[in-house]
Image (cartoon, rainbow, N blue to C red):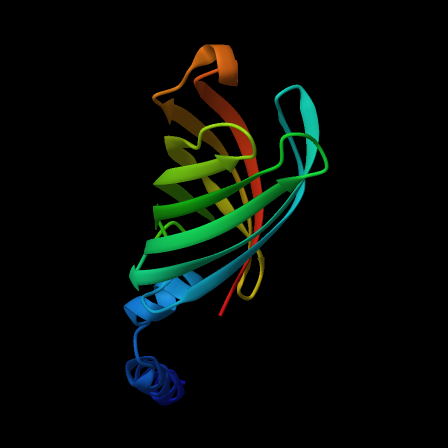
Amino acid sequence: MNQKLVAITVIAVAIFASTPPATAAEVAGAFGKDSTQLAITAGSGHAFDESYLVLGLGVNYYVIDGLSVGLSFESWSGADPSMYKITPSVQYVFYQVPRLKPYVGGFYRRTNIDGLPDIDSLGARAGVYLTAGRNAYIGIGAVYESYIDCNKSVYHSCSDTYPEVSFTIAF
């Protein structure tokens, strides 16, 4: 009996020792260095007391594990005035957390509005990613955006806080 137990223990130790430990890239997964994420936006938005169809496209690239830089474009149409937004961003995902992946980020946004002066804004976001599949995640969070050189008589409000829901596929 003892010989069998010793043999099983030796085999188990040999198998465990021969299995390489998870690399940082495996732990970071979809949020690992050199990963790319594509974002497609389709939804509605509200501005100037009007409802808009919002369509967009964005890409994020992870320069190191957890840290991405991104660029996105949104078109707001179906109401007057129409507008489009270009947004460079940076985001850090705490990929080390096993089930939920908290994230924080910041962005600069340039908004072009037909018939009005362009307006710039700075913003911050925070939330969590939930695993939805092998390289798919659902993000739930909040965004705070503050408009630079804002004229309240034109834009009604110079800051905004809104929820953020996303579906991300990484490759």
